[in-house]
Image 1 (cartoon, rainbow, N blue to C red):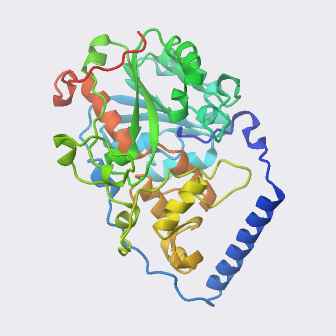
Image 2: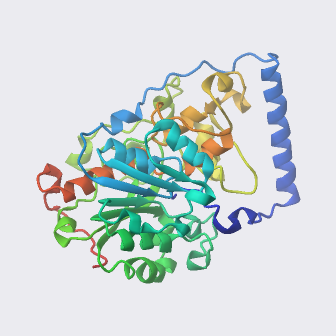
Length: 412
């Protein structure tokens, strides 16, 4: 999903229809949860579990690189997934633009010296004159709001008022950076959007040669099934020819029901940890990747759930982890018994499952934090893209050798 929860043009007014049966079930679950939480806060229940010490450090998935002298501009920055990935890949941060104020607080909390423009008065990209950044930016990156192409967003594409691809393209065509990186949900590859992609993205970027490709966060050590699409464009054809689509750095095939054909390369990769192992939970004889974490900014109500589907509920249940009622910290989570004595998540746990290190702090209430996490690009994935873009733009990098497999050139 793109890096910002779109609140452009009153998108929060979208209605969701529930049956009486569904409404009553949600009320029952909510009541049970409130009663259990009250008991925990009053000390009437014993701790449900020990405070966990995670085994996975996401920083190990994205080693801090030396400064590469490339300057980047972030659009639709959200909770900072792309920003952090590019930062650890050695880029100089020039500025971030994000409409949601709490996201600005998060970025400033972690990088006080960064220039961050947030809220309707500063962060609305529709109001920015991008000429101020001409000759000052090497790479623009961002995730235009993905709701127009997601199933949850009803896949209205060009007819969705939240579609911001035009604004991302306006920034690129005005600033004319050496390269750009745009991220979106897998739904944008649906054949129903082929004409949209061609007419409203590729044809609008005639000065760039572009490749589009899919990445799954689990292939880069993130313990989550999270498939996303990247559009990467270069102003110079020679730079494009040096760009390699990032190969998997971890092997997650042992968790997948449909195995890929094994290869010598894959067998040499370290294995992606499952959720329980990554969080440092006791072994129960079963572990798995997390289902795709949803954004708590979507839907009718402010929610503290990361549950994305009924299939996801079964997966979480099999791991004996409760995906609802996420708590602000691990101490509070440990004191709040979950259904069936399953492990209750904290926001730090959810952030880790998205690839954010413990050092990256989030501002806001729990639902706002989960909204930022669920809308973010997994930082280790952003890091791999950023690293390979830098290699293509550098004449001396070992990564910038021509790819053994041809890239799909789709514009230019």
